[in-house]
Image (cartoon, rainbow, N blue to C red; front, top):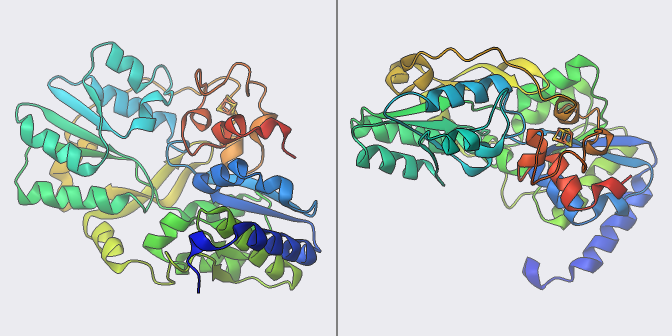
Length: 364
Ligand code: SF4
């Protein structure tokens, strides 16, 4: 068998598109959960390749976008504590909170530093013993194992100045919340590849069994996505609902047991706050009581001002799959990647940035 990069992908793509057209007999709306998929779909013009019967809509799978203003406001307050370094991944610094963002606070003199991994944050703690290092833990099941490992390492080294502020979220419960709301109308779900590489495909089973919605776990190459759409179209055509994997090189039904175990060793599930969706039971991860000394929320007392939302921004509706970026009156005029009003335009996985970068305003 030829390796993937030696195959004529255009022939494979044409075959998949022909098959999608053949099986797309019912009007269907498929949600791509993951912002990485949204960008790949927009970048490769996949929407334009699909028959009229199939519509794609973005979902809540962008960790930066779903970070609620209340959580960002807390992070900003934490950065104002004396002798503190706030460590964060890069996308988060430009995300607007209720009154300001981390970048503006850094310009105002707060010590806010971008890191590329939990290892960087740990090293920061070792080399700054007189400072408290508070690491913003944002992301889904994909990044949670790294944060968990950092806490275990900090414990092993008896680091007393390393803390995390957990905004971590887990994905399947939020889809349940969207479906239970009755507002999000989908006939198929493209499940996130990276998250599923950790948790496996089994945690999505309830969507097929309880809601009758077909699910396919997809990778991030254009062919992966076309294949997942073809598999969803076939299931829809046959009125089937099951969970399939179109990304077998990365995902198994059971997932990665080491990654799952370390998450459960360090974190408990807790209510998670999702922008535009609200509080969802069991969709957050907070440190277990035995790791409380690393928990910034438990150790540092802060009182952020009441939250407020960005006027005119419809990120919440976009994340719930009920509106598209081009429905926003600010899209591309007031709100651009250089001057973002909401997080969906800031993040490299945000729907608004995908539509802006790849001509979404001309998409159907
Ligand atoms: S275009 Fe900007 S203001 Fe409108 S929803 Fe997207 S991020 Fe929010």
